Image (cartoon, rainbow, N blue to C red):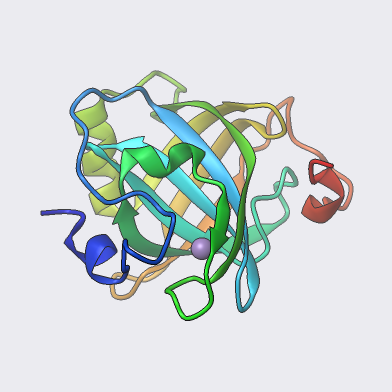
Length: 178
Ligand SMILES: [Mn+2]
């Protein structure tokens, strides 16, 4: 079961995070959670296959196509994690503050920006390259997630060159909600 690792890492008597169980109906939502843990990072999650496919992005997503953001794939999270905000207490896995930085819809797409089905998206992910179109409040437009080696969990998250792209330096912390 996809959420075994997620559940194993957490003590639900001690963390306010939701317990993992998979959902059936996919709504193609995404979330970016700012996670002020041992190291500040942004967690990027896509609702696919009854779970949230998840990457920890140390520098966060960038709207500048020049930035190739390292995105380390982590364990699948339950769909109910999509609006999780709060404090993971000290001593727990990922201890620190979590806040939703951005959220919205996404569409998995092919190279011609035609929508893919959920099944096609899962296949693309397995092959190590998934193109998506995001419609969030802060981030918008085409992105690609590409695995840069066959082995390991290291991917790159790159903004596609389109009308939503930002060409100047992109500072995610300045884009933080107040
Ligand atoms: Mn995290």
